Image 1 (cartoon, rainbow, N blue to C red):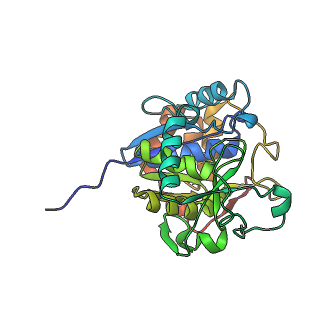
Image 2: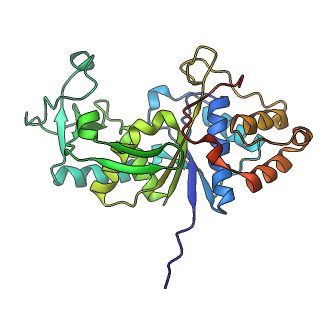
Length: 295
């Protein structure tokens, strides 16, 4: 007797370090369309763990922007900052299993070293609040098929080395938190930018170590500016102009290579989304890593 696949559960997980820019709304739209095309859930998570970078009012601005474009999420908003007990419980589990060790290397000492050389692995420093905590990574290959980028084969031990799961300032690292959050929210489809593809082998390593199911991944090309830089808050990308949401949404569908008919340009946002869900075809983005807004 054949088993039906579990219901599709996707998510969008912005950081409240400022308002959404065109690149982040592009990712939100793609993940929303993929979820709705599969008649699945689309969850909203606010990645607000990195408190020094959070901007006051940014979360409310993100929610308003998504609602302005009719990108309505399912259920309650999930905030990373409210999950500290879950993170602490899993860190303690890994500590007891001797997968963690304290690291006292400074950024200066590791400058120009892309792969952590394991200096503190056998140093025996106490795992305390004053240290960063690293995960001991075994030498093994992580292989998976990305929906757009094809087969990915990477050895995190060789490409990254032992990586940090809790920073020296006490903040849980993104690589660790996202694995716990996806598991707790039962996320089984992750649609995000290709700039995060490099992080995926570390996350899948953690998923395997913790016995978690592995989501399906789709890494989208990123939008770049005229200088070839990814649109981001670091490059001072402008906030989304939501004065004319239909015009912006039509442009995003073009950037996603969905070839919307010109008549759709004057449609309402709701009508545009209905068309986009019915015609969603991410394969037009296969093996693509960057998108120029100018074409």
